[in-house]
Length: 439
Ligand code: ATP
Ligand code: MG
Image (cartoon, rainbow, N blue to C red; front, top):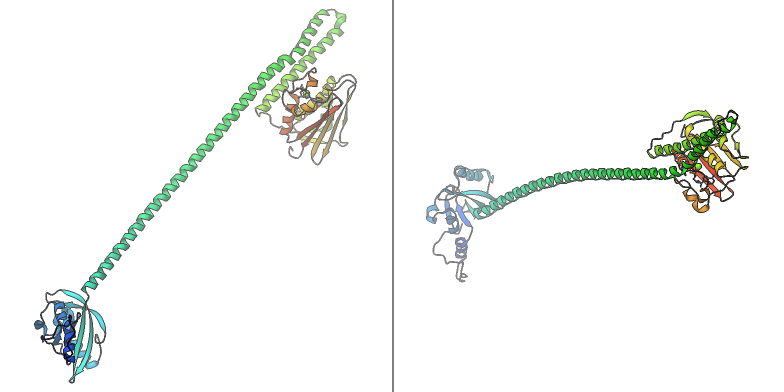
């Protein structure tokens, strides 16, 4: 190796070397001024050349290093093995570090260790090997790296912590949300219960109002409608008293018959009112029984005989084969009785009333037709309203309850009712009652 350590070299860091500088001088100047450390050792590990950067890197003066074994710059463990490395290499050519740069630990004069990057190259000169090590102090870089690693770890820890906090917050939010949803559901349930009870109260109130209105209308209707039969009862009773003799029995019987008919009339009104009250309160249930249509018709027509005006007759037309019905007989009787009694009541003596009954596809079709006074067109829409009485019927006794009850009964049987009427010509009521549903 041609370079030797020298102290009389010109400083290179400020000025360019004069042309007269030899190549050796130039190299020496570069060696002296290099920022990285450069150390040359012989085959035994003895340091021959050291530049100032290397010496200060280890905290030594140059003079303390020249001629010493390079192992003094290494931590104990490596120092012991270092001579062995060189010998191994020289004998086997097996490189551990030569030609390869690597990070190693250096040991300073004060015993502290520091990281450095070491690249070793071999120079063969005068038949012997010299090794040149270039050293770059990694303390600052390592510290920076450590700081980055530390910061990174702190950052990661921070991120983990934040993630955990966020997850906690999210969980809390989810819990709050769940609670809120639960509260909302509870509130909705309470609201709907309140609405429901409010509706119930309103319905009860409406019903109460309707019932009291019904009662007051009944009282006014009854005071009017009861008067006629009651005065008939009174006058007949007076007349019975006026016929005390034995031979006047026939006259007395005529008046007892009038009394009976007036009482039947009153009973009819009271029954209607009772039916209506029960219907209003929803107390009427259907109680189906089996009975023959022919027998039912005979009974009903018989009941109506007493109401017929002179010359009036009911022409009935029924299916030829007898039919067994399964229906609420009392309800059906009430329907027939109301429609036929209206037909009798609102038509003149000497007219005919037609009653047709036929069965079609499990539905009972009933038609009641009269040739009576008819219902004025403009009043027809009120026919099923309770207490309704058409103007042309004012002089005929009635409470206006019959058809309202009929309609409700038909609804209970899931049937339907409609009518057509022409003033002065007559009225036809049509009913359909499904049999299958009531069976
Ligand atoms: P109730 O039947 O309670 O004794 P009402 O006959 O007056 O009294 P509905 O049977 O409900 O009561 O009839 C209501 C009204 O409809 C009657 O007042 C009458 O004006 C009219 N009406 C009902 N049926 C007939 C009919 N066949 N012909 C003409 N008008 C009728
Ligand atoms: Mg009637």
